[in-house]
Amino acid sequence: MASKTPQGQGSDERFIFALANSQEKVELSLPFFIETQCFRLIDTPGFDEDSKSDTDVLNTIASWLASEYTNGRQLSGVIYIHSIANNRIGGTGRRNLTIFQKLCGRRSIRNVALLTTRWDQVKQSTATSRENELRTKSPLFKYFLDNGAALFRYDRKDGISPAQTIIRHFLNTTPTPLTIQREIVDEGKLLSETAAGIELQKDFRKRMEDAHKTMRHLKEEFHTLKKDNDIPAARDTRQEMINVKEKFDKIRDDCRKLVSIQTANPPMRILISPTPASAPAAAAQASASSSKQGTPQIQVRPRSRMNSFSSIPALPPAPQPIITSTPINKGPSYVHPA
Image (tube, rainbow, N blue to C red; front, side):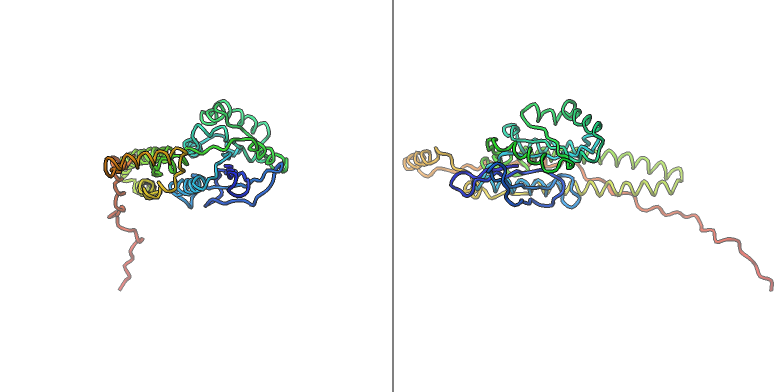
């Protein structure tokens, strides 16, 4: 993503913020110049990291974005990186792009650049065909492009020219806050109440429901194999059940963590929210009114535990290890003559 510091608050910089899969935390590049304009690149983790949970990734990104917005730095652009070496957008890719869509919101889509990489790893004809499919057949890519996003290629064989072309795209964009920034800072929502947080919870729910279906089928298969006395296959099925249970528990813990995250206490959210120009007049009017009517009561909006997953039961444990009573064949016995 790219952000621009308002006049009078330091150097005039544009920060380009890229959602990638190579970082464990948000990292900023050194400043560089394109046509006298100063830029900085910000790299972020993606939602398929092995070392970080999806909740941790979303919280890392949202915290950084909220901090930048609170300090008056608005984003001028966002880059989503997709490898053209992938022959299609799989489940993880669709999840990443959907959460990215909810994180940005429709207002800032004109500042989005979809970047395809690794063109040097695929035949030119194959890569071009995949790019056309992304333009015309991928609902998510098509949604971004139809609403003003730009599509770029990055081929390392062409040197730095493609990178410069992409950066120049953000020279004339109008800084626009992302939906998740307005939700957290202006509206005081918890991370789980944002559009991106709700989308991630939907994904958690689907994966947990799929785990229940898988466990049910494996349980039936286990009992059938045990009844047929196919002990080796039954042991393999039991191990699959253990693996499914571990994945389910990990997803459930990740969901609980997301729901429990408190972005800030209510008073802090009031302090860090940008003050509208009409706020002083409204405050004066409220003060005058309160002097006549007594001390006004502060109404606190109750926090709803959205998608708490209480309706999804925990998976049952896998069956106990199989112990057979078949005697072990130690070979023939010999009786030595006296």
